[in-house]
Length: 322
Image 1 (cartoon, one colour):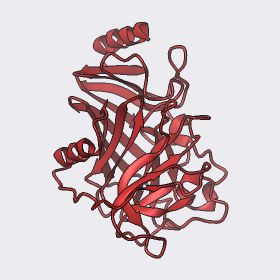
Image 2 (tube, helix red, strand yellow):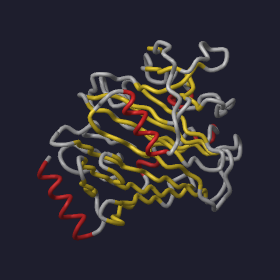
Image 3 (cartoon, rainbow, N blue to C red):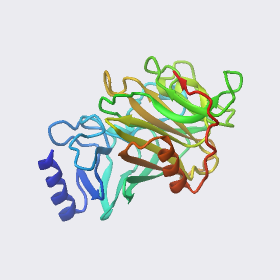
């Protein structure tokens, strides 16, 4: 692994672009990859953060063959797309280039069938934080049947001791307790109660019968109160945080107990845009935090500092463990 990282440093500093680029600062080492395979393990089609290390650890948070914050699906819920590959963002060419020392861009002009231009900028903005600014531009309208654009990002976690994600939320109306509380959720199977909508939403994306992305279709009985969640792996915490969700879009948490293989959960997220215009950008900003786990209060403070918002702590109701 050290040889690979050294090669990445030379490649990116000389060429400015390539198959993968290393960002190294403070406690984090981050490798951002395009859709090409590289090294011994990393497979073709898994762009995004292919390697993430904290401190002196040589253990990648993500499954070495795959990636985190991997741009995986574009969807509309329309059955006319069912014969297309659901993994078109993995297949279409995507260009990686370094913009600054700690900032890189992945740019995809469109995929084979989806006329959606994507620009993903990854930047190391703090001691343990990598931001991803995601912008999408529909070039023509193939989403008009159900009236929304859906995009899906996956993070494949390498054998964490706790496969659940944790967030502050409540039950959906009519589905259980309305009191805010910490929720620890692990689906029983892939696609079971897989996605969690924001509190206050009364909408689920309509789909035609036979819709073929299970983690979108499998809605849970929970909704989150603040747009962040975390998971724990080997004493470290991985926090996903979101803000600047544009034009009335929605961010949903999604998860699978086996997305990266047996014992390797997927801690994912979905962006849904119902208010879009052809030729105009839509998007959101996400941040991935990877550091030593110091408890839930530290997670909350990390979110508050990054977002500028305050969190009302749950009043002591017991966790939901599902």
